[in-house]
Length: 433
Image (cartoon, rainbow, N blue to C red):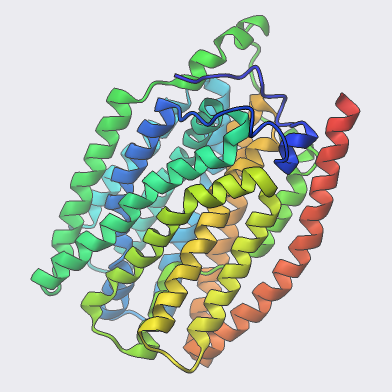
């Protein structure tokens, strides 16, 4: 098992590591078993969560008959409710030295929320259940990513996150596929999908609790002893790390113009009017592309730099918006949207976590990652709620064009913001040498 903290330098890297021009040829990639097991946990859990997410837009707007504004509110919760607890969960993982325990609590809460779907039938009930599920996600994500960061080789950090995201997205593709077959066999079989979702959630919690070791607690034991177990008091000092504050600004700005996938799929369905039982396959297509590109783009980020890949992912999202808003439709236009959207996630999800961990001191690793995830969650919650209102006011295609224009402006701004962040990080490394 590969576990090392000695080659972490408070979130700082040698210049050659930042550019990806050295060391990669000298250090072969080795996958830690911890990352493999965490990937399996995420895979099973994503079967649970994505099987529900794949039917939620139709369930809310079709089966329950609610408006796009109502769905925008629920999707906003789905995007951002996790922000309520992300930083607190990251701090708790750093403070206790037991990130697995914090992650397990989050996975367990999401599992319990799945039970509620079996009985909910109205807007407020659905909103409350989604809130509970997303709070569980907020609790588990940063501690889990901290475990990945500690277990990964520093020279292959983004690639290690890419492996985890690939496994995660096997489940993310399988979940909607299961929902598709359920609806194909049982029209309006939403309750059956909810039962399947609960079963997979139970499996995920069991695997995490019984198989995954609490790696960071073991790795930090010696350091904690040398510090005489000094209490880690919460502070926002990690935001003053060179580059991290700029990363949070950039992530928040881009998140404000990133609506939930469900809206993109509803726009495609509104344009092409395909049968509702095919709707879950849109989620499958996106996640298959994410699965295929997660490791290659993670490896590319380690070689050429994480910032260019992160920005390039948002350029793919911009192309998704434009293609979804195009007056022509059909199979190939839809497939193009799914490919671009999958490329967006492959180029941003794990890369953002890798960037945040690289720019955060090791003692506050989970807190730094959680800060970035919190900013993204809150900004995307605002984006989804706003897009629901915009759609209601001007229509699907016009709303998508407005979102595309705003995203184009944000990408240009972030290019300059993150270029400054990279220089600040390099300067910090040089001063400390």
